[in-house]
Length: 339
Image 1 (cartoon, one colour):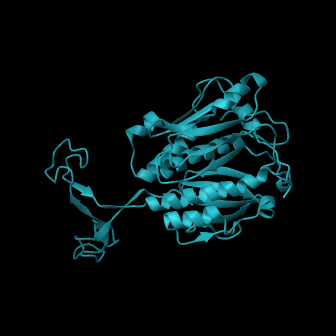
Image 2: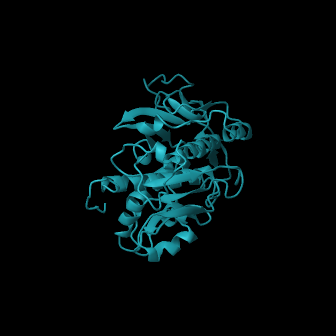
Image 3: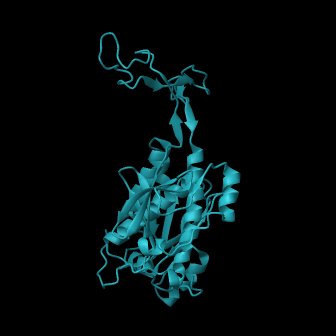
């Protein structure tokens, strides 16, 4: 590996990885250029992998970025090659999965004496399991915050472990992607890298931080928006991910999920539900204002959980989709479009 490297906030670098968001699954998509895959080294016995295996009880780590899966317990799924990029999908999981039981209406047969398809379970032979509300003890208090007066609550299994698998794999993935800054690892891609991301995970407050760099072309494009402009596609992606994770709409979405530009210099602030949880330009980046528009670093505030981290990454992925659609970062001079 060459010892020389480029810094994304000061130089344009051919793209070696990219983020995208799939609204239909929904899923966070990670795309890695084939040139980079052929050069990158993956430390199968790296300390970070061994530590996470022990700390979180993961059973396996798939280290081959050319394989069908990558990461802890196969967190990333390969979906093939498209336009010189290997594409990985991270399907957004539910935070809590309903516990099922045998359908009482059809006794687990899928049909009844009078109907070919059970009207309760629709032929699945199972229905959701409920218990008396643990707050009002099933007394149907009309203002009970837990059961809303229904007197019962759904039994669920937490799937928090899936988010730790994803977050731990992201930490390793982005560490590997850092090799792309070295000149010997540069690709032949026809457009520039838009951003870099770095993440980590630990079981404590502020335990799922993320930071990174916005590239010069991306910041130049963002600077063309009017101050206080909201990036609706970024907000929609984060709302989509939040609803999939928590399984319902929330008043917090309207208040706390937003992505908006500050003054007319491309400063982007992104927020998700939490204690002022979000990502913002670093303090050191503000000193660059008087030196002309260029790339800058961003960091996070109070990203406590892997769920918040994943939602923020979905927002950054949608940002990349917007920029690519507007032809940001392509080598041929192009008039940027605001979409």
